[in-house]
Amino acid sequence: MKTKMLSLASMFLLGTMTVFGQAKTEKIEVKGNCSMCERRIEKAANTVEGVTDAQWNKKTKVLAFTFNSNKGKVDQVHKAVAKAGHDTDKVKASKETYDKLPNCCQYDRTEAKKGSETKGHKEHKGHEGHQM
Image (cartoon, rainbow, N blue to C red; front, side, top):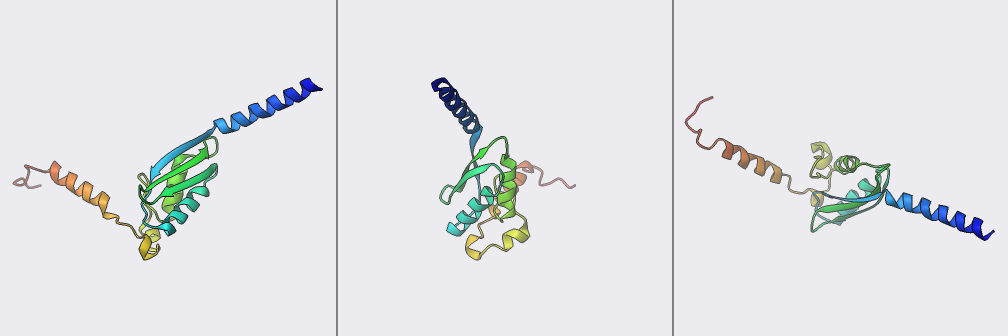
């Protein structure tokens, strides 16, 4: 009887370790401003199958989430958060969804444009006299 109980306990422990062994934590950048953004971002991330915990930090603009790597994928979290109206470092929210956010939640979306415009001007430096 003791051997059976030990075997059963060992199998349970092994099964538990296997499940937890597949848990993975990722961090992604997500644009937002306030506690309303925080709730919306975390709720969106938690809708993705396999996500067990999501925490967004409004100071660092980083969403840390834990998920079962067999069920969920990082790209799905990016898409879910963008669908809720918040740009991530890989997926941009649609203009329509972003425009529906409350005013306090509408973050500055010009940062990416400034970087690409600056880069574009640097690439053309020295070509001012050329016509295309």
